[in-house]
Image (cartoon, rainbow, N blue to C red; front, side, top):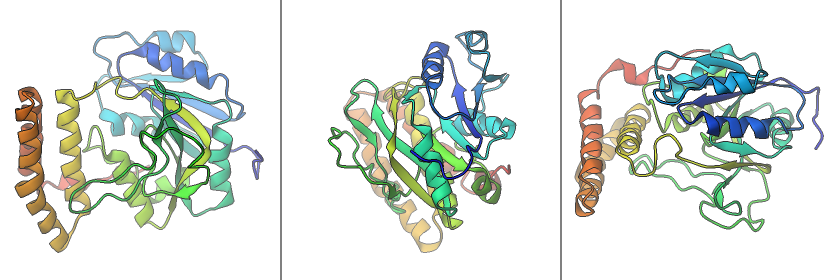
Length: 308
């Protein structure tokens, strides 16, 4: 892999929330990378249970910041971006492990085309290392608020071996240029968890930048270490975020139709599904998410974007 210019500084930012041993595994993989010009910033999001001090103790090369309040995914990463000095910001989930040569293709993609605003690598599941999690994603449908992940759950047999424009980068590993961040701002912190990177990608694209899936960059993702699978926390924030995305990005008659779809079809269907399965805790979490957006539908804070 040939870098077109000198090696620009890449700021790698990761957020830790409990489970510091998982972050340490990610940092172990970072020590093996071949790209020569990086800084690593670890932001602890006020971990309530597990002591994160093993991170700066065992990895003195990282810049470690321990917050006294949980700022959420967007807030924690935005904090790290403000501390970063790089030409590019790589937001990397702490539950990932990277291949040694994963950075060079990402940097090269930016240098080949100045209109590129963000990129993501190929992502496979760590527990099933031949299975794809991300090879691109379709745009979110502005009525149903759904999109389709390309390659998701497929065995990787070389079917996604070309770089392609994608609607969004993946929050587990997304690199954004400083120039794009300066132009569009940082991730909206109203989300707290989920959809913030999709919203950011939507704004980056609307500003005229391209977003690419880069096929020859590879990482592995353990997924859902902090929130768990189908937990009330995940259900609450996921569905709250979906409705926030709708409110922020759908306008005019499409907003009216999207609200009707959610109220008459999506919300009753999803709530009934949880009740039928006997998951009243998930139904309660889902109900709270819907109530939150209804109460805050006209709040100006929903539309704020932090500046770099």
